[in-house]
Amino acid sequence: MKLQWIDIFSYLVYLAFFGFGVIAGLHNALSYTALCLSLVCAVLWFVARWQLGDAFSVTAQARHLVTQGLYSKIRHPIYVFGTLAFLFVVLALQGWPALIIWAIVIMVQVARLRREEQVLAGMFGEEYIAYRSRTWF
Image (cartoon, rainbow, N blue to C red; front, side):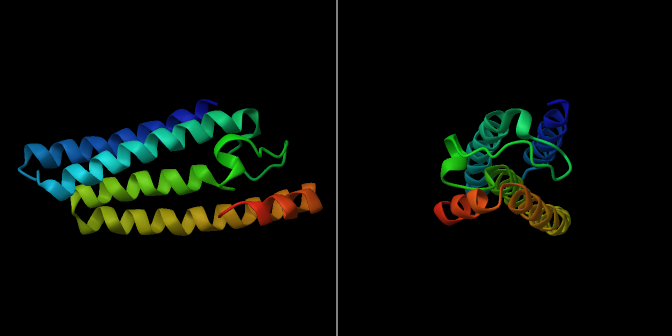
């Protein structure tokens, strides 16, 4: 669970950049709306991490299949809400460099997600296929 704090720290760094933007005069309705949406996504992201519990790992592993809570509706809520939380901070910052970094993170996340899907399907077989049919993303 220590690695969960790395995500939280990196998100807080993004928020700090937003704070610097406000100090530099970047404060408009888009910035504040995006920040609020980011905070909502961050809460859901952290809830998803908590619900995953000891099934969480940095590398793709199949300890057990989590199908409760947010995972009952979304197969990958950590990816969904974490990515959205960062995207909304990028929108709040309104800067191209942050958007480029976000796009690179998306490519890395998609590769991780595909590998994770392969591992879970290999380990849990029909149970995972049934789970996939009941959930979004």
